[in-house]
Image (cartoon, rainbow, N blue to C red):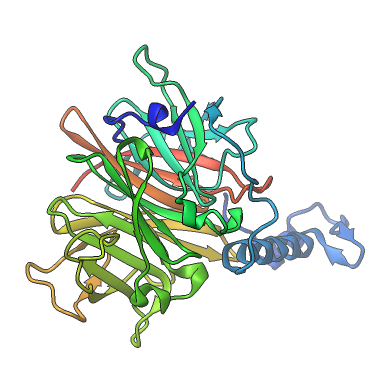
Length: 375
């Protein structure tokens, strides 16, 4: 199946821990605390948690390509298994978190070796997904079967002839945005530190450009978040490219960042919720954007926040975009390595979709969550 045929022009797409003293007192008199070697269960669990954190950080931060990224494959059909999940692991009736109302969540899996690693996505009003992995792979599928659903597919992004010498693992695609008027797509590549524009239906690469502003960012923490505004401007936030005050370097382009005629961007500063880093963003309108942010801690592993920022009416270099948190996803709510956010409209409501990146690891999950936004 060709990518053009697959991507149609209208495809818009835990309970509280007991203290150590309480643990000692929790058993019947005379009952010893079970030990694993010389380490108690509690200490053993904490040790394993720390090991898991180190593994996760290594996967997220190491510059070398991870061995579990899938090697090259051709386009073809895709089978996606879907399992519904409650928002809370301890209370299935919970459906509110901050400014979000939970409309459904699913754990996704597939026997196809290329599935997973989702870093960005787009949605339509019928629940059809256009997802992009961090290894240059497009995936199209639906979470709710309908007679008019397009056939699910998986396919690599097209590559220009002059770029075919690049190793397959270098196509670290982390961000995706779209112009519904022309049906063109833009993809941000983190390790290559370039932005490419694609023809309708991802038929071919139309243009790519690398900016010195982006090359100044770390290769493994550069174009993580990118959004096209309705007026044609683009906003790009660095995951790890920082300003002197600890904010995230942010580029505001007056036009297409893949076009050689576009002038140099304005540098802004994004201030996320404390301890978080941006992983994706999407435009609500010409000035307001939703930003997805991620944090990894020993206590909760992954947590995420959805925040809103507003561009000044006349942005100037150095302007600070202060995040206002709308919702936080942390245990016992569904929480994972959330990397992608998208919007859709349903019956006059704005729906927010959030997806997690499983890093192609057996101990992580691909979760897709749907919320109604209340502002």
